[in-house]
Length: 168
Image 1 (tube, rainbow, N blue to C red):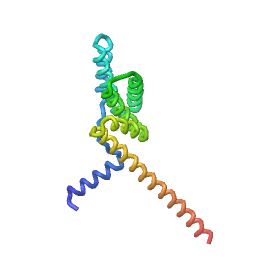
Image 2: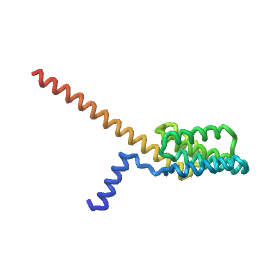
Image 3: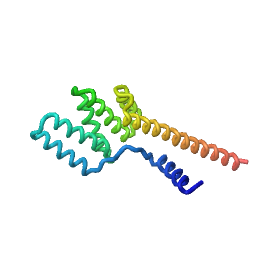
Image 4: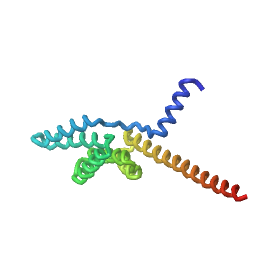
């Protein structure tokens, strides 16, 4: 195996165990900037400007590395879905909710939301990529779960065999 193939193989193994998805992360300073933007928009800008700044903040929150930020983003998006908006905005909110639930580990809810996005626009590449990421994560978690179960069964069987060997 060539060096580049070996490096690629090792990278793929590392990505498998680290959960290497391609969903971007957002830094705290970006979130703070979005929060300031929302505050200034609520003090005098148009309603559309306010909604756009809230959407940017929601995006930043669900892409955060901090669980409390992600939850805050989910709460904001769910509250804003309760008000009527154009279908395109609702689709974007559903997508961001799917990202948020993915980040919290609720893959089932995330997959349901991304499916709703794809019902509205079946060829939306971002949603299709997220769906694949979710499905890969579910499959990986299943493989790891089976490995843990097999190891536990092996340890129990080994313990029983050792105990029986000592009795003889």
